[in-house]
Image (cartoon, rainbow, N blue to C red; front, top):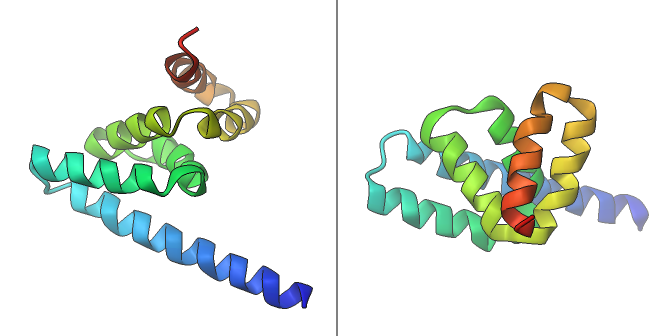
Length: 107
């Protein structure tokens, strides 16, 4: 039974990542209204999207990076642990993680 649960969870994560990747690809040609709608859609995924978003901040530029950052801020407290984990692994990412955590916590 454990193997079945793991497989379902992995499949769910793959599907979520594919959905998020499609949304982010649409940002490259989107107008401001569409960008806002995409950000709202991403935020609705909540904590399930945080690891994808942290990775997107590390790899993307422009609108994609901005939407990833704003989405993490809007998701809030659930974003803090993935940001901290990545900051420990990647010293160059620390200032970004610290900035976003300050924006989330207000400190």
